[in-house]
Amino acid sequence: MIAVAAGTVLLAEGTKSGRIYVLVEGTLEVARGDTPIAVISEPGSIFGEMSILLDSSHTATVRAVSPAIVHEYAEGAEFLRSDPDTALVVARLLAQRLQAATTYLVDLKRQYAGHGTHLAMVGEVLAGPGSG
Image (cartoon, rainbow, N blue to C red; front, side, top):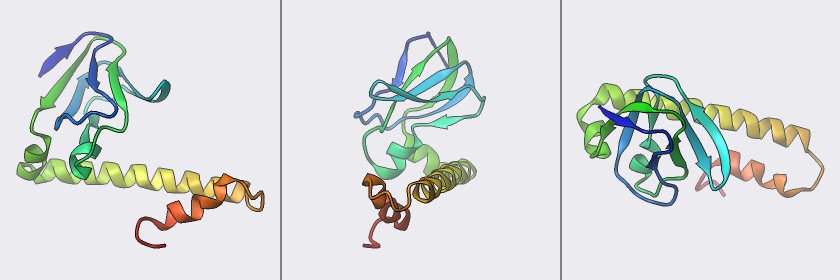
């Protein structure tokens, strides 16, 4: 476990750290650019998993809003390979996020049907990669 001060950046958007974190206590903010997109304060919350699983850069910055305590797994991919129970928790978390995003996109598509806006691409997003 490590203690982090308020203002500490744990993951920086556009970088690749290989780390996964689990929040023990405190409050963290997730932001893309200058836009806050989420606040994490639930003990047991996992972050950093997307870049590990996709072998890509972090899609957002995670910063401590208050002093916090986290578990840090410096070798995130190895941690997930060696702990199938945690990997299943991460898979469920990602499935929940996908379900929420899909529901939101379907709502948008219904609300703006026939408006001919850039939301016309929502169908392509919902279909997923490789379907076009």
